[in-house]
Length: 64
Image (cartoon, rainbow, N blue to C red; front, side, top):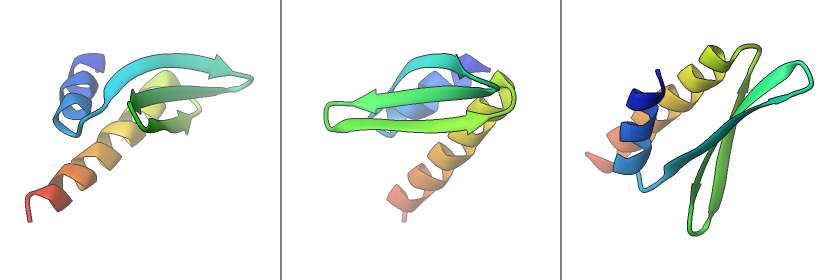
């Protein structure tokens, strides 16, 4: 689960920083030298899936 996220993040110029529980939500944080992206979900898997889906969309835009 995290390996795919790490690979996609690196391809988009980010790195997986952390997954933290914030109240009843999980937050996955990716960062680069300019800032960070965060994705939330009810479970850590949901947050990772959201991050992965968004990275795939971002990378597909780069390929056009």
